[in-house]
Length: 129
Image (tube, rainbow, N blue to C red; front, top):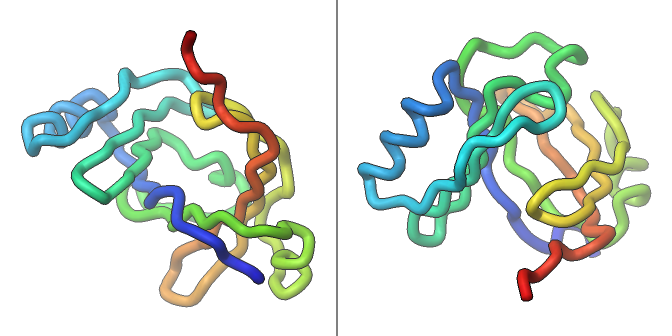
């Protein structure tokens, strides 16, 4: 079936607190910035738009990236291995976890100087009691 949904758009920011404050002032719900993998992140919900702000991309050592800007869309797939068989993999696959649960992710390069993140949900996030 391929891509089944969009999780978020990833954006690299130099100042996570300033970016979080900007989105909060714009009416978004923003999670508290947290340490994650090789940098820090915060999740932004602005209406139907879901962004994840990163200080460093998880795949940053695999390619050249600007100091700030759009990184990639994060796309859910029903079969990560089948999706990756159609692409040259830049980074991954690897299992990651966070407030989103547990996911198996990988990145490929796409035209226009961006990457696509493909992900399978392995475990759903814990629901507070």
